[in-house]
Amino acid sequence: MDQQQRLLLAFALSILLWFGYQELVLKRYESPPPPGEVTTPGEVPTEGSSTSNTTLPPSPVATTKTGDALGVPAAGATVVVETDVSRTTITTKGGRLLAIELKDYRETVDAQSPPLNLVRTGDVLPVALRLTDGQSDAGVDYSADVSSVEVHGNDRRDVVLRGTLSDGRAIEKRFTFQGDSYHFEVAARLPGKTPVSLVLPALPPLDPTGVGAETVVALQGTKYTYHPVSKLSTEALPLAQATWSGFATHYFLTAMIPLAGPSDASFSLVDQLPIGRQDAAGGDAQAAFAVYAGPKAESSLERAGHDLIRALDFGYFWFAAIPLLHALRFLHRLMGNYGVSIILLTSAVKVITIPLTRATFRNMREMQKIQPQMNKLRERFKDEPATLQKEMMELYRRHRVNPFSGCVPMLLQLPIFVGLYNTLSSAIELRHAPFALWVTDLSAPDRLMMGGVGVPVLTLLMGGTMLLQQWITPQQGDPTQQRAMMLMPLVFTFMFINLPSGLVLYWLVNNVLTIGQQYWMLRTSK
Image 1: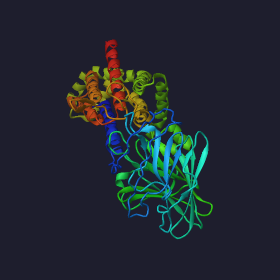
Image 2: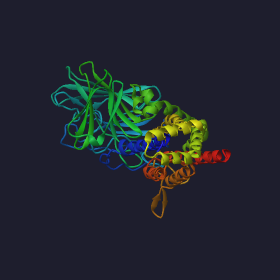
Image 3: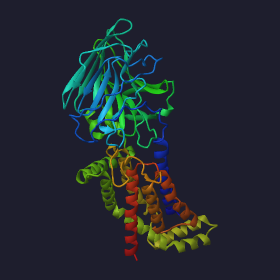
Image 4: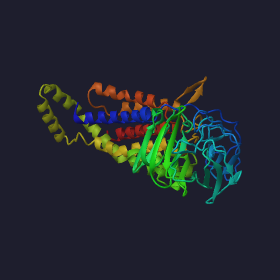
């Protein structure tokens, strides 16, 4: 096997390993236990629609687990805060959150599905305060200054809760909401220099595939770190000097940000529920946090500040992924359909990379022409490796063929290829976005129900086109190598079965365009 063949095979295997690592390791963490039952669905807006005057159905009243300082019955009065983007329900028992319902996002693709709630019912509730001496305000009976609040646009409104800790100390808890933002502030005021930790439970499992991908995330200095929730135990996972920390699923984030600056955080299991805590200096001047609870959408994260945009991780090829994401949004504004936009974006990328593809194909054709002579040299000098190498280099020189030139265009295309993949796998715009026919959610796996069985039609078509593409590609190397390459379509088909249909659509379109391009080059090169 010559140098170029080794490089081509190594390149193909690298792509396969990269996909396998992305899908079988990074995105396959074990999901936490499912949340309790959801209340009866009511009339809600579609995603992306205007919600400033929308009224959502009442939130369920949760009962948290007993036996832990943070888990006490969540009875008592409630305060409902309506903003342009969410509806937050606060219980006066502990001054915690019963619900954070996102007005522009639904539980499922069903038009009658309830708004997505980022709070688990039946577990420890968010934004409890834990003090150094082990006390918690989860059992404090607060009195609220209002029973409901509406805030819109850039306006900010406070909800003030006042109560008494078990040791007799007065405590004030102040929530500050802004009308057009998914982030709000929580400030605690109590006597003495008392360090305070904010408590944040894990998100409900929200991934459309049903496979949990929840992670503990944090920004520590300039480093974005993440850990699988499934790896948490009762022993705390420490995260030193975090600018912010919290929990993330594929499309959503809840994060706590100490406003006084980076501080230590820790994550562990409490009654099998993943819990995060982040510290802030306490005292008469207040211990203050910001909390983000919303989508991993670029505009929302940037607006919230605190470098939360780092939670939208496009990998090493972010410099290609971000422009491609903006291009996808632009095409959607023109076409109104993200499936059509993916087709157009894939076609545009294919056109841009035509020179690179032609260079690769031309080199492969030239290598194919001298293949008989290379085989003769291998047979003649099979016991003389040094002489064989020298004779092959001379053969390349006479025919003006560079064995490495075919790999350079492939490597140049890699950032675009990986960037587009990361764009489509991370863009929340594809969540619940319909395409056509049976594809009603581009973020969910492709399934056409036939006789009660879900058939991955797009995925099978993708595998078929990949096989055809391999078939018409100029063959090089020995039969063993060629058989290995022909197995790639089968492996990729298996890997793509449970991937979002938006990614499968991209790969299918790319294969069809590549087949057309190869057919045209075969015809014109004769």
